[in-house]
Length: 139
Image (cartoon, rainbow, N blue to C red; front, side, top):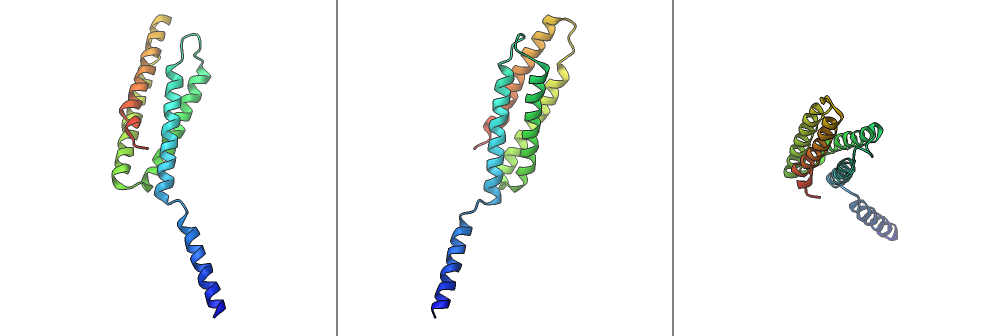
């Protein structure tokens, strides 16, 4: 009798501890929100650059981080619930499209002043693209 009681108690304890684990959807939401936060940080960092502070390595590192964050989001979105999944998919698609468009417009200048204007405009557009897409994702 005592053995059955101990086994039952152990089983209940195991079930209680198992219920404390994070679901796939919770993990996916955390991944998406963490990546979204890092994208915001990278965009703010890029927008804060000036002609005197910008470096190729700095821009490339931020863009690589954004790309990595987008990959994390794409990998996690399949584990999200219907509405949230759609919201994240739409944001990812919109932001990626806008980043590609911005990247295609940069570097076509013929003078240093035009390059500065293009860079300033591109970084502002990147910030706007973030606001129009990921800033709307509920975390």
